[in-house]
Length: 74
Image (cartoon, rainbow, N blue to C red; front, side, top):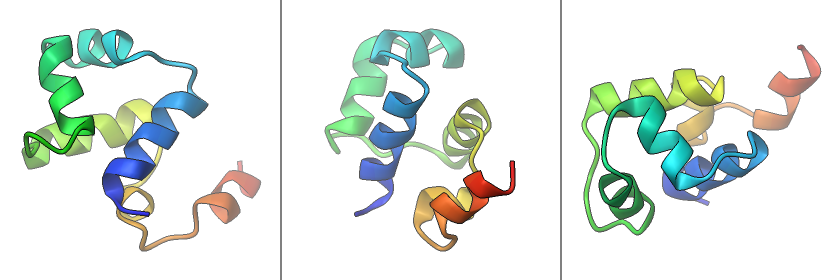
Protein backbone atom coordinates (compact mmCIF):
# COMPACT_ATOMS: atom_id res chain seq x y z
CA UNK A 1 0.00 0.00 0.00
CA UNK A 2 1.45 3.37 -0.99
CA UNK A 3 0.57 6.85 0.20
CA UNK A 4 -2.12 7.29 -2.45
CA UNK A 5 -3.87 4.14 -1.21
CA UNK A 6 -3.59 5.49 2.34
CA UNK A 7 -4.95 8.84 1.15
CA UNK A 8 -8.06 7.16 -0.26
CA UNK A 9 -8.42 5.06 2.89
CA UNK A 10 -8.21 8.14 5.10
CA UNK A 11 -10.80 9.97 2.99
CA UNK A 12 -13.20 7.05 3.19
CA UNK A 13 -12.67 6.65 6.95
CA UNK A 14 -13.72 10.29 7.35
CA UNK A 15 -16.77 9.59 5.14
CA UNK A 16 -15.69 12.28 2.72
CA UNK A 17 -16.17 12.45 -1.01
CA UNK A 18 -13.54 13.83 -3.37
CA UNK A 19 -15.57 17.02 -3.70
CA UNK A 20 -15.58 17.41 0.10
CA UNK A 21 -11.80 17.16 0.25
CA UNK A 22 -11.23 19.46 -2.69
CA UNK A 23 -13.56 22.07 -1.17
CA UNK A 24 -11.74 21.85 2.18
CA UNK A 25 -8.41 22.36 0.39
CA UNK A 26 -9.67 25.10 -1.92
CA UNK A 27 -8.79 23.20 -5.09
CA UNK A 28 -10.91 21.81 -7.89
CA UNK A 29 -12.37 18.34 -7.63
CA UNK A 30 -10.57 17.35 -10.82
CA UNK A 31 -7.21 18.37 -9.31
CA UNK A 32 -7.85 16.22 -6.26
CA UNK A 33 -9.12 13.36 -8.41
CA UNK A 34 -5.89 13.47 -10.42
CA UNK A 35 -3.93 12.99 -7.18
CA UNK A 36 -5.91 9.84 -6.37
CA UNK A 37 -5.52 8.59 -9.94
CA UNK A 38 -1.76 9.18 -9.75
CA UNK A 39 -1.93 11.52 -12.75
CA UNK A 40 -0.65 14.58 -10.83
CA UNK A 41 1.83 14.79 -8.00
CA UNK A 42 0.89 16.97 -5.07
CA UNK A 43 3.21 19.47 -3.49
CA UNK A 44 4.42 19.18 0.09
CA UNK A 45 2.01 21.86 1.33
CA UNK A 46 -1.00 19.99 -0.06
CA UNK A 47 0.27 16.75 1.43
CA UNK A 48 0.53 18.45 4.82
CA UNK A 49 -2.97 19.92 4.51
CA UNK A 50 -4.35 16.47 3.70
CA UNK A 51 -2.63 14.97 6.73
CA UNK A 52 -4.16 17.65 8.95
CA UNK A 53 -7.58 17.24 7.32
CA UNK A 54 -7.53 13.48 7.86
CA UNK A 55 -5.94 13.76 11.31
CA UNK A 56 -2.97 11.54 10.49
CA UNK A 57 0.74 12.18 10.70
CA UNK A 58 2.86 12.40 7.56
CA UNK A 59 4.62 9.25 8.80
CA UNK A 60 1.32 7.39 8.94
CA UNK A 61 0.36 8.58 5.45
CA UNK A 62 3.73 7.43 4.11
CA UNK A 63 3.56 4.09 5.92
CA UNK A 64 6.36 4.72 8.41
CA UNK A 65 4.09 4.53 11.45
CA UNK A 66 1.49 1.95 12.39
CA UNK A 67 -1.86 3.56 11.62
CA UNK A 68 -3.96 1.19 13.73
CA UNK A 69 -1.87 1.60 16.86
CA UNK A 70 -2.15 5.38 16.68
CA UNK A 71 -5.94 5.07 16.65
CA UNK A 72 -5.80 3.09 19.90
CA UNK A 73 -4.07 6.00 21.63
CA UNK A 74 -6.94 8.40 20.90
